[in-house]
Length: 92
Image (cartoon, rainbow, N blue to C red; front, side, top):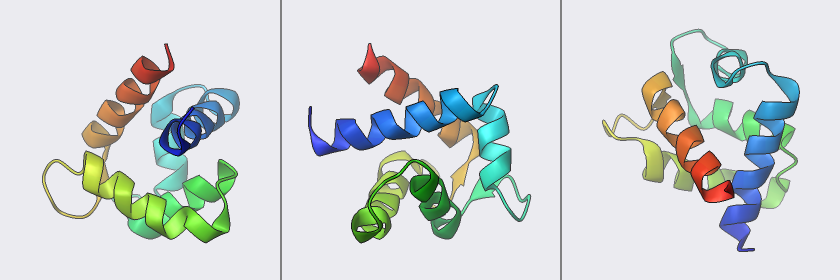
């Protein structure tokens, strides 16, 4: 399993074990309720998913680069849903 797969699996485990739906997870980490996750909010999600502090900043940037379709440097709900769907697909 690659490092990327390991990280994505930890995120999926966090979401499925601690939240009834991905939307509840998104809303929990969207601290300012603007319906978008900032890099800082993503870092907190990664911390909760037990991703090493050393790489959280790098991983959060890579997640934004990979899933931010409208290039606003934020992850909105639609982008988050696509990311979760991709994580679930790669897990099966």
